[in-house]
Image (tube, rainbow, N blue to C red; front, side):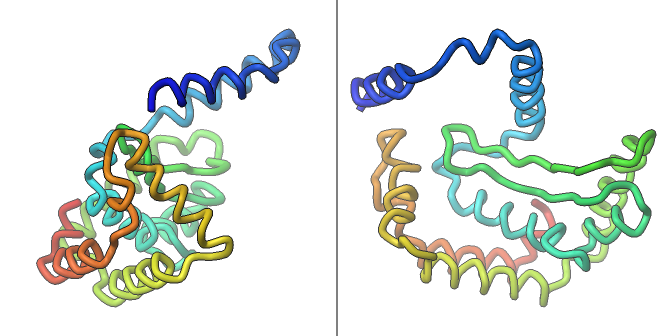
Length: 193
């Protein structure tokens, strides 16, 4: 697969217009984008599918709606306009990041303190079982009933393991993973992620 990947990047890069990089604004924007997207925490590899799925579900429970505990704490304190926890689990080293949009000037440390405080509170009290279960059910439904074009979505998911010499079916067989996520919920494992 390595020769195919090299061929892909050579062909796709052949149309790249290097004149774009003459503008210093474009270079600065590109560097800022790379740095900002690099800030996060590596949480495993593409093989840690269930852990990545669990972190994605946890992110939705914590920040998926304005009533979610972390988002509600940040918004109600007027610290930022939005906050989201996301995971990228389809690359060699999976990572999660917390994206906070339009932080109020001078409130950066307060945002970090709020994230820590809410995390500690949830570790002590536990994550709302109903919110966790509804998010898991919605997640499982979307895995089984993908948006159109379903074939393209499944091909992309298959590539997430195939790119790393894994079995293409690894990312498509999800029933055992959903069962493991439900068992994690029953054991309270989401509280320790």
